Image 1 (cartoon, rainbow, N blue to C red):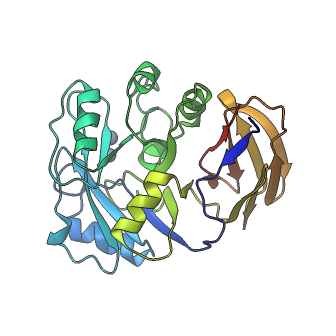
Image 2 (image 1 turned 45 degrees about the vertical axis):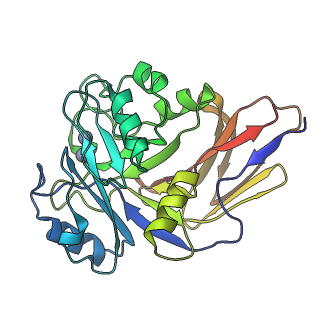
Length: 291
Ligand SMILES: [Zn+2]
Ligand SMILES: [Zn+2]
């Protein structure tokens, strides 16, 4: 079978919506009220936001959305590694067996994203064995902003490459995990969507039609034939990674085009864009099929 590239992005849509799926309020350990948090993100030009209080579903209908799409959600917290419950209709009990939690989230028509795997002194808030054992979550946080002021690492692309290298299909998210002012605007996702609707944003998230960022802007992501092309506005270096973090191509400049060779046996390619300081962006993996 000839190989093909599964492109999660649409070549014909060039509009991107900025959002964050991880923010706390006074309904858990955040310092600001839900309305204050919504006001801040709306002022900063976000198109969508999920308030994700610990084991508590903050009802978005209780606040003025200020023109944003508010996604109902929470962060399953007690008894184990933290899991974001995206598009929640009701709270899910924090069962110590997180597979049960993930199954319950999925039964609700919602989806699960594993939070900050490399948090804490041992850099293992969520051990890799668990990430490999659990089924049914759609992604992990590859960057969590609040960890910049906590123990461990905000970055978890190492965990991601290990999962992807095993053939797992997991999207990469970047979120603030904001608890107070100063935590906002560190890490976000850009969703490819034609309009601002809850259904459209959720569908794009499920399908991987988004990229994660801490400051680099991606202008174009395009796949033609066996070539993946990424054009950024402001990256100094782009790297195409494949299985287990293997570097396929490094380019110093704002644009990269990588062609998968016909006899390749790699499972995926993803592109990382490095800008100034800690500004980065991460495309989703392009799965190589037919190998
Ligand atoms: Zn957490
Ligand atoms: Zn959190």
